[in-house]
Image (cartoon, rainbow, N blue to C red):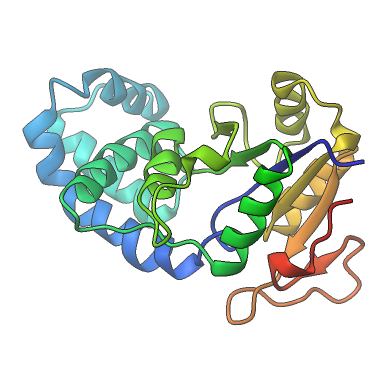
Length: 225
C-alpha cells in the first residue's frame, strides 16, 4: 500500500531540457556578477566551496571553481545553493517560469486531493525546488507537496539517503512510491524496500530492456490504489 509518494523533478515532473537548457545556462551566465554583487551575503557558502577544494580561494578563484563545477556537472551542495539564489532572482524578475508536464500536474493534484502526501527529492537545492514549483506554467503548486529533500540528506544514488527520508517522513520504505528517470536512483530506493517506477518519457529517456522495475512514459500510467 502506498502511503506517500517521493518524486524526482528532472525527467519526471519536469522537462530535462528546461533544467539543462534554461535553468543551468541562466545560472552560469549570472554567477560571476551575482557573486561579485553578493559576496558578503554568501560568504558561508563560499567557505563550503573552499572546504571542498581544500584550500583558501579568492573571490575570483571561487568564481572560477564554481564555473568549473558547473562544466563538470558536479553535484556539490554549495553550488546548488548558489544556483537556487540566482534562480530566485530570475523568477522574481519574471525571467524564468518553471516547467511541469501536464500529466504530472493532473496526477499530483489528484493524489493530493486524495490525501496522499507527496515529497520531492532532487539534486537541486530545496530552495530551487520550491522556486520551480511556486512559479510554474500551472501557477503555484507548492501546496501539493508535504516536504522537500536535496543532497543535504545524501547522494541520490546512495541507498542510505532513502532510509533517511523514510525516517524523516515517518513512513516505512515499503509504503513509499519513488518516481525517477534515473535507473541508479531507482535501484538505490528499491534496495531499501521502496516501491519504484522509472520514467522513460519520449524524447528524454529510453526504455531500458530487461530493467527489473516498472517503467512508464507518463504519470497517467501510474495507478495508486
